[in-house]
Length: 619
Image (cartoon, rainbow, N blue to C red; front, side, top):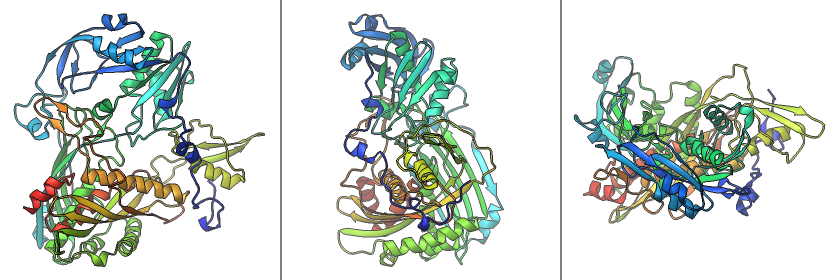
């Protein structure tokens, strides 16, 4: 492993270096999957289920195949199988134009026997609810129970207790470039231009699916318009487009529609947790008892963290997943952590208030059990408090005068680092240097970072990047990253609208390779966290089983009017190198929720914090 020395002595490491692809993106020259055009390319479309739950009895593609311009049509589900959510894939077509493909989809005939469905978590948990998954007894998974210490002894020692229920909604990824691929066959060799975060994983998956050696599958991702954890494989649409291309004997492009992106391309699961917690009179967090559940749709990935960040010697947790007739969850920027952090940071503020203690001081007293992380977090508390002006917060929540009330809050996050240990080993070739790296390239994602290291070590600038998979078998240590965020909000007590004024985000990320892109990652994560806190929510209609806001008009994401001043501070801690894409998304919602409470003096325990919830709380 190379020794980089001090960042201050480096020509490039730790400096603000413009992303190599920045000019291409700003001028529109960057080629995303949607922008790729192949000679003779066809256009693909997928027919999704119009109902939330049914058994497919027949599929007839003949009318669609007979439409002039249609070159291929394939089923994506067998008769006798069930569809379990609106939008689940039934069939696909490829045609000479996108309009013809849309017309062909309408000509596909299929019959089904509709089944009872349930899209509400509480209804799904009720006795007698329609069965969603054949491999579960009922719609709720067996709970996972974790415990430590003696919880009853802990509560016996507690001077104050808080009992509360916290809820977080389902959030969809809203990738601006929807999931999609272009597939092209040359004999038994398959080339796919994919909007993916994992070119090698996608290649492996496609090779297995079509029973090909990986050497005969090539996956290309030049640029990707957002993934956030949802694009780690080809998906149904990726397999479908390859099948269509093989059948048609021509390249096929298939990009999901915006509606389908909401329905089938993954989401962050919901969370409901009921908590009882206790603290001693001197401010020690002593006991924590939590029972919770969430929904990952028809999937089982509804996990969330808890207890979280703070040290508590006595705890018991019980967590389970609830199946409903909705699209399955996928990994989403720090999976499970924003939900748990929102609940835990709300709880910490509630305990601190019961003790008549400053919530920041209460956090300091109950630091991380890991000494290194605790040292970092204590420093982040100090820096963030200075940057936000913690002394300005309301000593008594809601005590500000006037209609427009301001408040300040804090939240914390914890995320793994080093889980995908890799190395960079430059090789001197006659014409170029090659960097063997243990991590994957996801289109744009790592180019600047990898090239900064090789340029620093070799003295060569502006290199071409050619990516190939590699291995590194040294036993490298896995670590964690600690982050703290402070938020200042303004709440209009007449309309209920919450406006975030400023967010200060301090994130441990080890050795900062490129300070400019590190700050950019923090900014993006904070914006996503703001959307989670105040705006975004998948809304399901219990009468029809459908998502009623599967678009960008009714599913609100932050725009320029909602984005506040963001002070992003990559916190240099030591010489290890840690990813920063996921952890800054964790603390934002908790910090904003606590700031809202500090402003209005009424606790809102349910995300998103929308105007109606604010007005209901105030009334």
